[in-house]
Length: 103
Image (tube, rainbow, N blue to C red):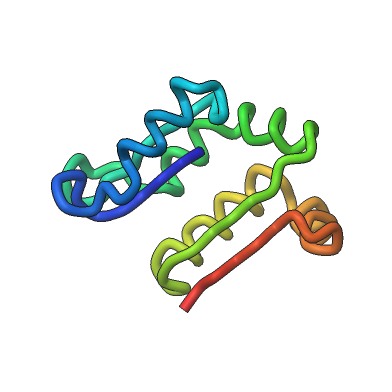
């Protein structure tokens, strides 16, 4: 799971629950991107974890992207197109495995 927000100090929603999911083995990987606290953006983390993403998708994973369409939405879409290609993104959408809640 890759969780991104602006500030670690005030936007770490569900942080304890997510860490518990890792401890319980429900999540195998958890990463945070705090754009204002440490300058890490979701799209940068996603790009760095391209191999892991491909592995998860081969195993049937779903992608969930939510946030501002012109910020994170556009950036993540661009990285996904680079990593996966438009054809694979369309296939994931057709399979109901690519979910976007952008505003």
